View: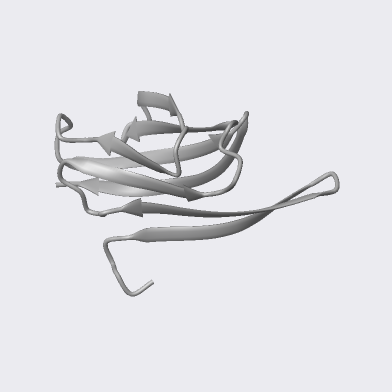
Length: 100
């Protein structure tokens, strides 16, 4: 990825007779006000994200209902945060986010 402000991750999940290709992006990173979490997957019905601070405290937890989700971060102090994307109880991807 040439744009250092975007974190993109593609992965393939395997299950019983199932193969799912997912692409995740979190941008801009570092961020100031709004972080966009983009998920390229046809079925979003079981996806969620959690926002954690550097100490591991859960700050937000929401269902992903759209391919692009805006996460408001303007009220947070400058620090490092983590966005964890889950499908059901399974962790799919974790992003390290820098808030300026």
